[in-house]
Image: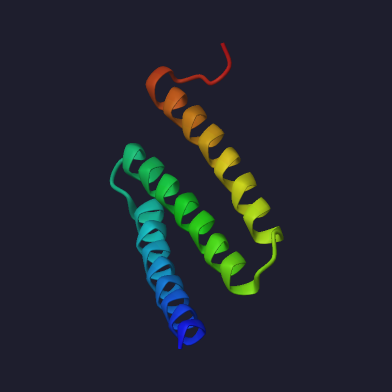
Length: 93
């Protein structure tokens, strides 16, 4: 019963995260302003990271968790770079 409940809850979580990724993709592609597109991109990388974590729980391997960590680090750096670009117009000073 516990394994079945975990399997179904992981499947439901993956479906909901996939739906959230579709909405974030919609915001990135058709956002009215650049700030909306950056927020959509932030949401997209967080959802991708969470999807990899749920895949890692389901598969029971550490590879997915390491990939989620790499996505988190690169997503944070890209968010900071995009925010700096939108505020100042340049990334490197």
